[in-house]
Structures are given as C-alpha cells and as structure tokens.
Length: 266
Ligand code: PEP
Image 1 (spheres, protein in one colour):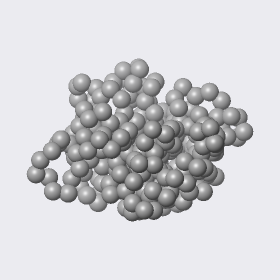
Image 2: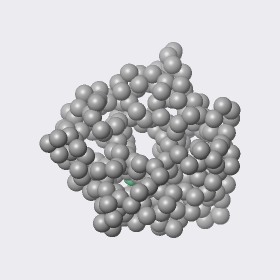
Image 3: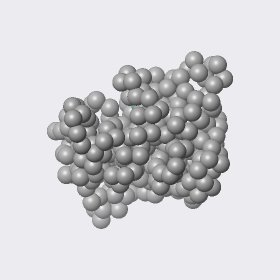
Image 4: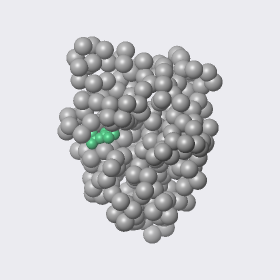
C-alpha cells in the first residue's frame, strides 16, 4: 500500500526512563527493528522516533545517532540562550542530533501553563535551529461535547502557524485530550475527520504543498491492536504514542502493525 508520506511512529516517554534504562531500551529497539545488515525489517517503510526526558537524550543519542531511528526533545525554550533557569534551548537539542521536538503537548499546556503564543515562539525557534517541531493540538472532552472540536484545533493551528513566514517543515500531532493516557481512543472515523480538517486547513491557509507534505500523527491511547485501523485513514500518517511506547514489545508492535498495513497484510 503506497502512501504519499512516510508513516512516523513516535514514542513520547514523558517523565519515564533515566539514562541507563533509556540506553538499554534504545539498544533493544535497534536490535528489534533491524536485521544483521542494518535494514529495517520489523518497521520497514516506517520511521521510528523516541522522545526521552532531557537527561536521557545523550545516552539515546550515543546509541541511535547515524541509524535509521530518530529521537527528539519533549520540549524546548524559544530563546537560544539566557537567564532561563531550568529551560533548554533548541540549539542544545540540535547539538545532540535531535531531529524533532514536541511543541505544545497537552500536558505542557494544561499542567505547565503553555499558551498558543508560547507554542508559536517555540515552533519558530525549533525551525530556526534546524529541528522539526511536532506541534500537538486537540480538544478536551468538554470542548468536543460542546461541538467545538474544529474551532479549538483551528485556533491552535492559526496561533502557531499562520504568522508569516510559514515554517518550512513541521509535523502535527492531533491528540484529543480525552484520549491521552485514558485508554479511550478516538474511533478511526473521529481521527480521520479531524486529520482531514487539519490537512484542508493547511492547504487553504499555508499552501497546497504544506497540506500535501505535512505528516499528521494521531495520539491518544494508541496500542498495537488499534493502530492498523487508524492508519487506514488516508490522512493519518502515524502515531504519537505515550504509555505503549514505554514497553519494547508494544512499541515495536505498533511499528510493525504499520509495516503490515503498508505491505498489505492488514
Ligand atoms: C501522549 O502522551 O502523547 C499520548 C498520546 O499518551 P498515551 O498514548 O498514553 O495516550
């Protein structure tokens, strides 16, 4: 099954795994997805990335740098340096070889007061440091029940992306807040509808090329047994996985269900 965009399966480890555990996981992940010749067998045709805590990034980078697997930061500041105690500049992530950084994860928005405006600044700063931002968006349960899903997504996209010049390259993760860590997944129809809305918004408000090339990930209780159905939606280009990315078998299971889909096995 050929797809216009390479699917991405990304694991957000949140505040789990210190350096030693993260290194061991990265080594095992490499071992599981590649064969002896270094070819991606279990995850053929799929890009796999992990987002460890900051302190584990150097260990993960030592293992994954130069391989087909990618890694990124869970957050960054928008300035390149300065008196910002506890913050990490996008350039520091670039120096470790990070390909991605998450921007505006709902836990950052709701637990740490991130706003649409700070997301806009972080996204721009990441692009300037040559790191691809993964912008997270999505509605709460109350917003969905009030029929405001598209209004909320549109507000988050507009705030982060609409100011000129349009950022060159980014990924979007649609993560309905009611599905994160709850075991409640959006149905393939709900995910497909939201992703279609996002792609059309990008085409109309940035450019048809941005609509066509931007990868849209679904996030919210993705597991090996529900990911295949989600990926059948034409505008779902992969997953941002929280809980199930902490376990090697379930994370590899999600990557290999994407490969099974691509090779027509499901
Ligand atoms: C997430 O944290 O981005 C996430 C989707 O978590 P979970 O898969 O556990 O719902």
